[in-house]
Length: 299
Image 1 (spheres, helix red, strand yellow):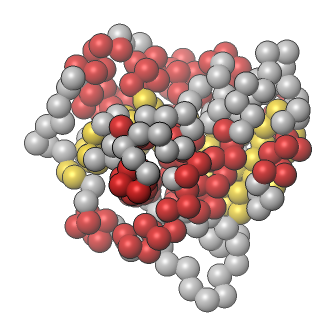
Image 2 (cartoon, one colour):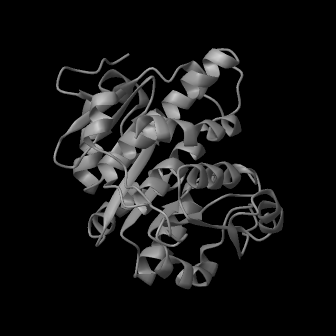
C-alpha cells in the first residue's frame, strides 16, 4: 500500500486553527448560513440522501434541499423533515432520469453548493444528469461530485474545468481509478500521484478517501488526515462526508479548507464512535450526531 510522503501537510489542530470556519452570530437567518442542493439517490439506495442531508445540517448549513427519484421522495421527506424534497422522474433501472433535470432550475439557481451523485449507482445515468446540469448553466459557486458522478466525470473533464466556480471531487480508491483510467493497484501504489493528477486535470480540490485521506488542491498543495479508523469503511460513510463538505462550502469556507475540515470532522467522529462503541460495527448514521460538538471543539 502506498505511503503518504513528507510533502503533505497534516490536518491537525494547528492547521484547523489557522483556517477557522465562518462564525454566524445572533440574527443570522437560514439562507445566510448556506444553502445546499443534493441531487442523487436511487431506488436501490433510497436512504442514502438522508445521511447526506443530516450531515449537511449538522455541519451548520441553514437550508438543505434533496432531489431524488419520485418513488423515494415522499419517504425521504418524512425521514428528513428539516429538508425540502424535489421529486425527479425515475428511469426503468431506478436511477434519476436526466430528462427531468429542468425541474431543478430554480433550486440550482438558489443554492450555494450543488452536490451531485450520492447514493446513485449508475455511471451512465450520473453522466447524463451531469450533462443536463451543465447544459442548463447558472451553476452555483461550488459543485461537489460524489459516488457515481465521479467516474462519469472522466469524459467531461474539459466542461468541468470550465465551471465558473469551484469543483470538489470526493473519491475512494475505486472511483479515483475510474476517474483517471488507471488500474486500482496503481492508485493504491501511489495515492499521492493519483489525487494530485485528478486535482490538476479537473482544476478541482480532489479527495482520496482511505486510511490516510489525502486532499489535493489544483496547484499541488497536499493535505493528509490520519486516524479515522477502520470503522469508517462502512456503507453510507462517504455520503456523510460529502454532506459535511458541501455544507461547509455553502457556509462560506474555501473549498480546500472545507474539504479538510470535512475530512477531520468525519474522521474524528469515527474515532469517537470507535472509542465508545468499538472499532468496527458502528453505523454511518451515528456519525452525524457527533459533528456539532466537534465543530465547537475544532473552532
